Image (cartoon, rainbow, N blue to C red; front, top):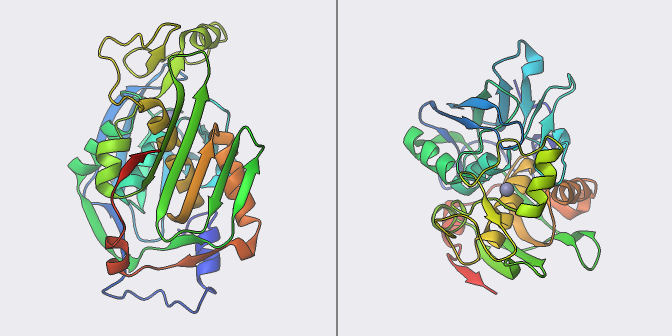
Length: 326
Ligand SMILES: [Zn+2]
């Protein structure tokens, strides 16, 4: 079965006359070498959830499946057309009304490690929070092993700038040779303050510099969330909690700029819901999950703003590797 919503494959058959046959020097699609699993608590529901990752065939993409439900209604493709966002997490749902919350850190791990095709089985409605970062998912994927597949990877190249938001809070995509992420946050009168980061994404940078950055929340917001029955599973074990005078977690921060790194991680997961990796520059200023979904919708609504490409290995290997604070 092909992906239910597939802007990429629809367009790829007519774009540029690229033949989908495998050519040895093209970047291949990847899946997992074997199945692997873990369990943990959902950040918003507080429920214990078991998660399994399974290898998937070429052109399948990232597909979630609810093991606690029967039939085709249990499947949800990880695609922007399925997104029902709130500012708190990225949630996907299908036509049957079945949904899965908080997919962004797991999907970011797939994006960061270059996994194209994978089936994610869950026995509940939310991906486990683990430690609030993508690092446990990176370990899981590396334990399963990564397998190259006999089909070229398709990329979405940004051809024209697309921007959503206003001067204070916005997200944009622009043409660039690599996939570059820039992010800026400003939380005045809080220990977070102003932070900015920019980097070209590759496997090692993702694993060392971005994957381990944890989600964060402010004590005053957490009290409000808890009293409205939200963030039930949230604790110092799976989030950096920021009080008026600093971070409450005894172990402190993993990076001095862990907050903006996490926001960039969120953006990476959200953008991978395009259905393929993006070749272009993303910049977010105070943006969040809902805005990232709207950005992709705006890109796809403009056929002259993007096209599908395959990429020679040599070109992908030539990408620069660095993380720079701005
Ligand atoms: Zn996050």
